[in-house]
Every structure is written in structure tokens, then in C-alpha cells.
Length: 459
View: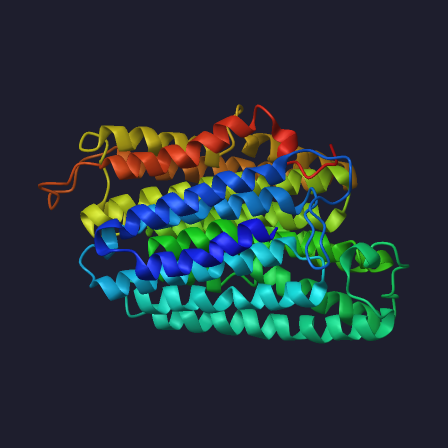
């Protein structure tokens, strides 16, 4: 574990001390090297946990998420190059350092075996994200977006801290492998129900559950490209991961607490998909689409069967790559036209034909076309939900239909149609952007060949 965390921390002096000429090259290559090293976590094993130390251990649920977070750091650095071109050197260094600072905390949160350390890492990821949004966002509204993010997260996670302390007093340990062996402590008393609610609430806000999701579109729209990728691909997954970890400890309670969350998650998947059909803002559309995907993950995490957990895992990984790629594509459009409004950036296919290919690939994976892991995940989740209650098929079915329709709407309105009169000349797409898209799509294409790597099921 340390052989990844320490090099990640040592990226900071690399970013701060590299000569200006090699700043981007050094940080990107070094983080890519760390990402390739982290692939060893995916090696199958017969033990419940790999690389177990006193404070960290990797099991089937956390290893794919850890590899994803290592993989996305070089991609975030590559995506940010263009909009930092005109900034002074010191600011570039600060930006890269902020990106790197969030990484050890995410790695800690995903790999820790101690609930208290998990809470600390979970909260610490908020600070660099907040700096990214409020300092490097595009519009003045970024300040209100930062406030939303901060207060939603804080208000929901303070009860989590209190409940963790309460559990510690009752059980005497917060070590996850030990907690899984003890008898469920939360009873169906009022205290138990409120504790269970507090445990879930922080992750429900983070993953966003429909109804607690208002900070997400704001934060996504105002964040710079690296901030959007970080939010969509990693911080949302912290919520899903937390739900999967915490529900295992709640024992008999889940029967009470299932229903409101499941209902809201599935209804939210339906509602946010229909909101997407009426969006005018490209980044906001992609942000709402991730709310609807994460709704399925929450629903799967609440019913706690083996199938639903593995479906939720696969969906989290494939959504991380897909939404990150969509944000990168939206950003390439934004850097050329300086507008996120769909009506002002339409008809770009004749101008950027190769980008249109990437758009099509990203949109097809987003709407879960057959050879992708997205389809496998959505089918798994739908089957488990159907097994749990046959009525859910109505909600999930309509949500799938709406997902397909807004995805095609997004593809058609950005690539087809008349070119707006104000676009007279446009920059060509660069090799860097194509490489960025390739590095997103290759893992998605390869994972379907061996999906058990990310399925969270013991091999």
C-alpha cells in the first residue's frame, strides 16, 4: 500500500521543483508510472484481503476503485494543460499540487480498514476539491457552488462522526474486518434507527441521492475540467463505496431503512433522466446523468445481495470512466467555442470529424450499448431489483429508455444540425486530446473481456 501512497506524495516536490519546460511531462509520466504500478492490486487472490497491514487492506470492493483513482490522476493533469496555458508558472504548480494533494486522501479512504481513518480521509478530500472549484472555476457563481458543496457535505457528515464515536463506545473497535465478525449492534430502537440514518446520510449526499443532489450540478458546472473529472469519477464513488461498507454493519436495520432510500434512488433515476432531456447546458446535462446512474448504485447497495454489490461495483467503475470522458469532450468544445449552451455549440461534426467519433463512442457507452461493462452492470442491478420486487422493473425500464433518449439527444445536438453563424474558425483537435480520449476508452473496452476484475465478487 505504501509503495503507491509514498510515490503519490512525492509527486508534490516533483510538481513544485520541476523546471518549467518539463513540468507537465514530469508530472504526467510519473503519475502514469504510479498508475501502472497500481494495476498489481487487481491480481486475484483467495484471501479476503490483499496487502493487509495494521491500517490498510485491499479487498475485492476497494481494489478496482483504487486502480481507477490512480489511473485518473495523469488524465486529469493532461486534460488541464490547455486552460492553464496563459497562467503564470507559480499558479500552474499550485494547480497541479492541489490535484496531487487530493490523491493520497482518496487512496486512504478506499483502502483503510479503520472507520475513523476512513472518516478523516473522506472529509479531507473536500478541501482540495473546494480549492479547485472556488479558485479555478470559470464564472463568479463558483463561490456559491463551493458553499453548496461545503455545507451539504458538512451538514451530512457530522452525524456520521457522532455515530462512529457511538459505535466505538458500544463495540470497542472500529476495525472493519473485526466489525464484520461481531454481532450487529444497531437494534431497531429509535437510537438504532437514527444511528443507521446518520451512517447512511453522509454517503447518500456524496453519491448524490435524488433530493440531496442539488450541490452536484452546481459544482460540476462551475468546476474546471480536472475538478469535474475528480468529482464525477472519484468523489461520487466514495459515496457508493461508503454505502457498501456501512450497510454490512447495520444488520437488521436495513429492512426499515431500505424503502425511503430505494424509492428515492429509483424515482430519482427517472426524474434526473427526464431533467436531462430539457437541459440547455452541456456540463449540467452530464452532471444530471451521473445522478441517475448513481441512483442505480444506491438502490443496488441498499438490497445487499452478492449480485447487487457486484453490479454496483461494475457500474461505479464504468460510470467513472464514461462520465470523465464526457466531461473531457464537453471541455474540448468549451475551449473552442467558450460556451456550454447546446444551441451555440451544435453542428461540430463537419468541423472536428475525429472528435465526433469520440463523442459517439462516449455516448454509446453512456447509454449502455451491448459490448460495454455499463450494460452488464445495469442488467445485473435490474435483475437484482426485479428479484427483490417485481414492480421496480417499471421504474428501471423507463429510466433506461430516458437514458437512451437524452444520450442520443446530446449526441445529435452537439454533432449534427446547422453550424451557428458565430463559429467562423475553430482550432483543430490536438494529439493530447485524442490521447486523453484513448486512455479513457481503452480500459472500458478491455474490461468487458475480464469483468470479474471489477465485479467485486470474490474470485
